[in-house]
Length: 163
Length: 191
Image 1 (cartoon, each protein chain N blue to C red):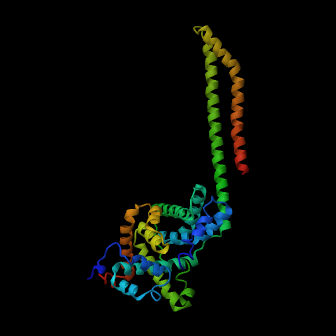
Image 2 (cartoon, each protein chain N blue to C red):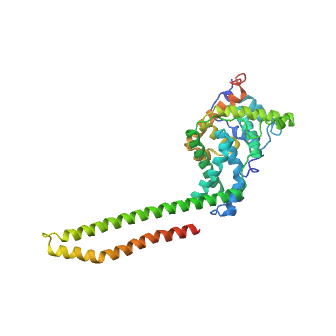
Image 3 (spheres, chains in turn brown, cyan):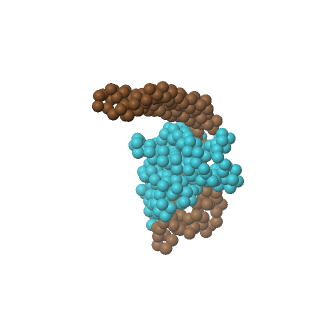
């Protein structure tokens, strides 16, 4: 067994062997020294065995590949992207609306609670007047904010779905 | 069919397609790459139907990622990496059998065509059987190296291994596939 026969991860003529196969020169159009080398080198004979099988398989697969036309793929991708954007926008709108309603509910409860607290006999005079002012001016303001926060996501959604 | 015929090594095409993708650019890129990517998916999954599905999913994810690719090679490697990850996930989720024949193979009309076609179809069936006995990473590396002509760096990027270990992993995979292709009677006759 010569040094060339010893199985090791590379051989200096491995790339040359592969190039001959991939260019179609193997076996008839390549030089005799390469054929003689392959006959004695485990690595290069493996390259020939594997590369010829894989390249033949690749060429057959390229002929048979049932790929859809590029226009169809592009159209499907656009439709899918649009659907995903719509669903994402819808989820955002629902999440924002839920958050707004929860916030409005908490604030309304706080104001009502404050007004109730105001009626208690032991409450401090200043604090009571502050809560009362908040109860008087806060409700219309909160309603305006709630309406705006509800409509804004809808406007965003409409803008997104227009695309 | 040479590598340049497959569109794998053209510098002109690399320069022409470095810009972000509009419809025309995408369609041109798809025309150049869809068949090789399908062939790759077909051989690494062993399932033509799954390859069809993964092909479309791979292009969709590639398109949605809107990554900035500085050249065609980078763009192509990125697509192959997506395809590889999708195939890996599918194989993990649904451990299915490896189908050895390509679509159209085993077709009596094709086998009757002429002797060469029949012999080649048999060789491909043998390759399918042999590939089914390799690990998924071995199949990926062998295909990329010998059917696609990828460099070790490109293989490392696509498969997700260290560049330094590609050579030894590829060597072992090639050794195993060569032995399987030669069959038990012929295996190791050179050693």
